[in-house]
Length: 257
Ligand SMILES: Cc1cc2nc3c(=O)[nH]c(=O)nc-3n(C[C@H](O)[C@H](O)[C@H](O)COP(=O)(O)OP(=O)(O)OC[C@H]3O[C@@H](n4cnc5c(N)ncnc54)[C@H](O)[C@@H]3O)c2cc1C
Image (tube, rainbow, N blue to C red; front, side, top):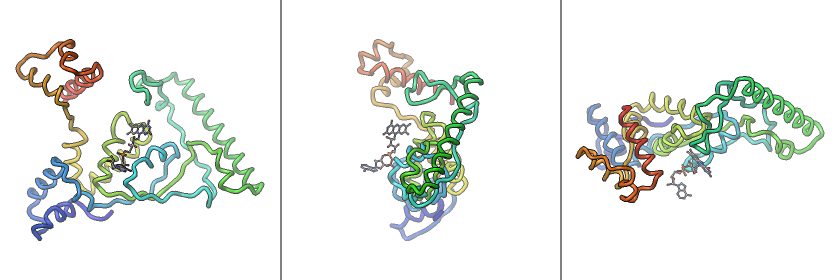
């Protein structure tokens, strides 16, 4: 990595020609910058990771365009005999509420084990075929095209702290796929250890913050006056059913804090 909390402060204070002041002044400044989305000082910190990841995770990850990437080439090199397998506890049913995700409900253990065994068998079979194609002098760029999405690839991934926070906000979220979330958690831990003040501000003002639409604020105003509008009144106010449900979810999050 290049830079740390002090680089953020230094960049923000460049107009005064002064560097670090006291620790608490630095902390206040970083929190102010995060709160008011004054983002460019956070771009002064850079991270470069060497990451090994299954291709299906890489496909989600690569959508974050504000990074610099250099990936292992299956045209140039032989793909490794390494595949991702979920754990039996990780095999869950399709979620009914989130169409993109899995639910908390586990599948019965026999089916989970059978699923994993089957994945492994197919991975072995496809890798055997890959080896056969290579040994018959078929070009590497063609031989690899039937390898599964669970095949591991690797890359160098370089990104600045502002864009890394954006990545973390999206990929630490409970709606992100479990596998990419596991990577995001480790990266978050690294950022927490290396830029503790900026990470704390990120947690406070972005990761754990909840925003309210202007319509939701109307409800909150009513609530503060001890009057929660009825479901129908909320519909009349212009909120959709989905917005009302999400509003109640936010309120329950607040209650759980
Ligand atoms: C839970 C989840 C589910 C998702 N599901 C799907 C899906 O079903 N299908 C799918 O295709 N994608 C899906 N995505 C990917 C998602 O749509 C984004 O592509 C991805 O999260 C990257 O976000 P980003 O573009 O903000 O990030 P970055 O590419 O890092 O960009 C950061 C910011 O820079 C700006 N920016 C960067 N490049 C450009 C540009 N060329 N033009 C304009 N502004 C730019 C934007 O403001 C952007 O927010 C999903 C993502 C998540 C987290």
